[in-house]
Length: 246
View 1: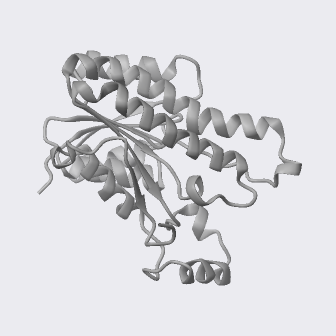
View 2: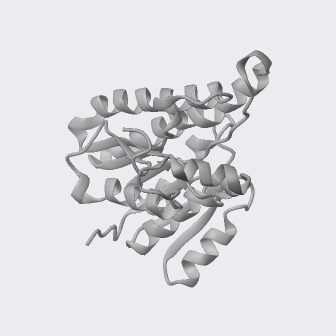
View 3: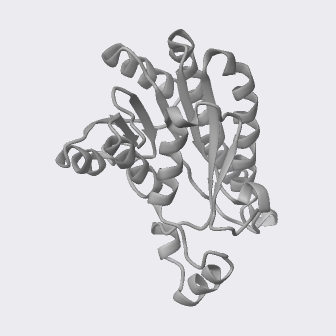
């Protein structure tokens, strides 16, 4: 059984969906979770974890604010003495066909989905190098591999995230730090629930396993990559898509 006891984990975008599921599952495996999101939006995540007997704390973080990821990592290390797991999950969409896409929407998606992951990873790598251990896990997307009309900005950000993580994995492997990507397919979250019933059924029909994924499916993959059992896996993109794209 996976055990993350005595590990300190930072999860961004922890207020709902995949981020909340990841934070909860890490805590159930014994990690002390720092649940980060804008304002106090992750408070319910923290209350759910602590109410179940887990260890969690709230962190207010705008990942696009200059210096904010670095300050949060420094604060976590100052208070806990270490940081073992970082999950870059914060992400947004600003969907539009390329001919109509505004530059501001391109910039916003790249800033949140890719540049923020760079800043957070760079900050976390420093204490992890001193520890000679650590797990960096980014949440990607199936659209990085297969593309999707109307999501050129989102697909570019997630494809960039894969290249970024593969490169950093090579840089830090000698210090026993692993860097991986979990790439979800169609997951049952607030966004997909907003789809019309017929469309949702159509998407489900394209998935060989015959169902949408759950946030817990993604969280389980994250927990595995965060564990000692995955210590020989780095620079990998782990698809959690029900066979939708292979």
